[in-house]
Amino acid sequence: MNLVRAELERLAARRFVQLMVVLLAAAFAVTVVTTLGGSHRPTEVELGRAQAQAAEEVRRLELAHDRCLRIKAGTLTADENDYLPRDCAQIDPAQSDTLPTASDYLSGVFVFAKEAEPLLFFLIAFLALFGFLVGASYIGADLNSGGVVNLLLWRPRRPTVLAAKLGTLLGGLLALSVLASVAYLGSFWLIGQASGLTGRTGGDFWVTLGAIWARGLVLVLATAALGFAIATLGRHTSAALGTVAAYVVVWELGARLVFQILEVGRPDRFMLSSYLAAWLNGEVRFWDGNACSTGISGFCDGSYTLTWVSGMVVLLGLTAALVAAAFTVFRRRDLI
Image 1: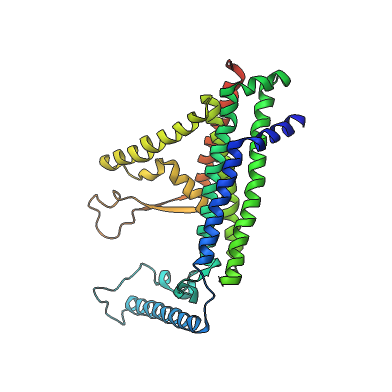
Image 2: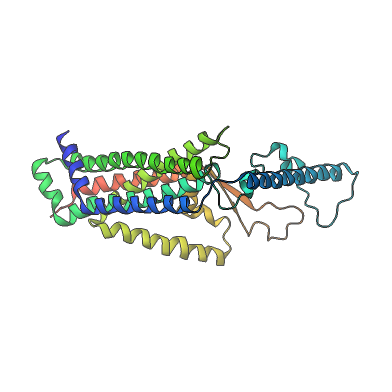
């Protein structure tokens, strides 16, 4: 317990951590202030006009669905420009979860229900970057400066010391992420109440938003653990930064270009970014441009899907493997 408390004090006292917290708060403050300054409470005239436009769009969708049914039944001849899905239910507004609403036609009005998911993704991205940089610098600086050696003189158990550092990092990051999430989304909720609209927040809205937030927290903790593990393996903070930069340039950009030249099928399944997107969104659909270029006649669906399950396997598997490697190397090598 004394070791964990000491590590928590060391983590909070690091100037880099303090600077990152300030930058994180500043980025959030700028986003909140910008949103507040660009939003206003809609007038009755604006609401009436927006509601009329939304109703007109719903009516257009209903007519398109009715026309589809009549063409399928053979009572109406299709035009060249008619879009006919395989099942007319695909364009049935009664079965759609995203019907046009008045908020879609309001200009300069912040609508919390419409903007909550993009804002949450923005928050997760910032926290993930924060976690990776702090995790890498936390252990990297100690290894490079000899701080770990001094700590082992007091507690000569390498796995215990490294586990305490990693646990302290993840615990502190989790607490900060929860507080930041409440403050961040709470601020935008108040903006929607005072200087905009809250929108439709019933049904599955909060359940969906909560699921994204929970998966986002897992991603934030995983990126922090990855930064910690890579810096431990490389004995320096720059090892983590260099590894990420090399991966992005060599694989995400270079290999993707090679796959495109060689016309490799479903290239996105080989990219870590695809699985991260699938994990956060729950499901991501990609298009394989080579699937329908082999002379196949008729309808060809070149799309394929990655789900959060595959994203979880890749993310947690990679994290567990690197963390295990870091503990193994840390136990055996010379730290001086």
